[in-house]
Amino acid sequence: TEFISANDLASFMDVSVNEVIKVCLNMGMFVSINQRLDAEAITVIADEFGYDVEFLSAEEEDTVIEIEDNEEDLQPRAPIVTIMGHVDHGKTSLLDYIRNASVAKGEAGGITQHIGAYDVMTKSGKRVTFLDTPGHEAFTAMRARGAKITDIAIIVVAADDSVMPQTKEAINHAQAAGVPIVIALNKIDKPGANPDKVREELSAINVLVEEWGGKYQSQEVSAKTGLGIEDLLEKVLLEAELLDLKANPDRSAVGAVIEASLDKGRGYVTTILVQTGTMQVGDIVLAGPHFGRVKAMTDHRGKKMKKAGPATPVQVLGLTGAPQAGDKIQVMETEREARELATQRQQLAREQSLRTKKHITLDEIGRRL
Ligand code: GDP
Ligand code: MG
Image (cartoon, rainbow, N blue to C red; front, side, top):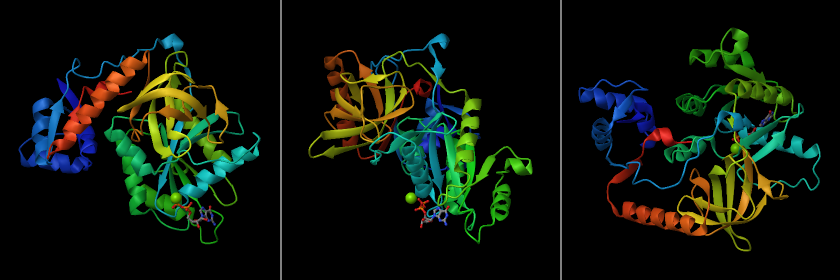
């Protein structure tokens, strides 16, 4: 059996795929980026990087049931977007502007709290979900746990600055994950802004924008004045349309942990992104090595929710521990089943942490959501 591609193996080990290819060449193996590797090759390569690999067969793996959805049960869902780019190019400002603009549009209260993800309604009445985690983390930590949750990446480049190392890194991460990119040329309000210079620098790293005949959508924006942001969102939605994103809202929920913490008054507070299905208050969930019954759910404005459908971020109370970002969340039939699986996972984690060698566990990766 072939398990994962050279590219995936590289990301599991947090090294570049080029390093993997180089190591392979040194051993006389010619491996291409997307080539799937068998167990023997994975073991040998991982060993070169100081990893020991454990292969789980389908039987040994969790008994969590993956429900295959029928085509006719699938409905369109909102895109999940991550904003990435070099430090100080305006990621936080852009997110803040988008969030505040949407708050101003209605919904009483309006005090947003940081929950690591939020959804907004665009002027055209479509929903877009943003992950408010450092982009790098969204793409490495979460991916290492098998969670692929970003549909589209907005790469922010300050128009009064240049394509920087972290800009390139962000583009590489998005490309490696096969996630479409929309370029935001930010700080266009500044006198020193020179978006053409940035377009030129982007073309030099093979990111040719549409205006110049390339395939990448870009938009001049100002996170300070709001100029161009509505257009940016429309371009994101256009990209989403091409992806034809769908999920089945009428099944038990499956999702990913965005962040989790312990709150003195409320216990464990977990932000979950529901990916498919609908999560409801009262559901029993398995979340990585933890479980619990959903006592309450709120959105990023602190508003209580009874249900959360696909591509909806929710803050959940009721787990018995704090899972890690990227851990999978799954609604279970019974509390006993959830507890057993959680306990198994905790044991596995304990055993693994006892080993001296770095360790990765692979299942047949096709099973990832
Ligand atoms: P991050 O590190 O990418 O999250 O960048 P920040 O959002 O923290 O922005 C860095 C600095 O640039 C802050 O002082 C922002 O106020 C400023 N800034 C961000 N976007 C704009 C913009 O569109 N125009 C102007 N004039 N300043 C901006
Ligand atoms: Mg920031």
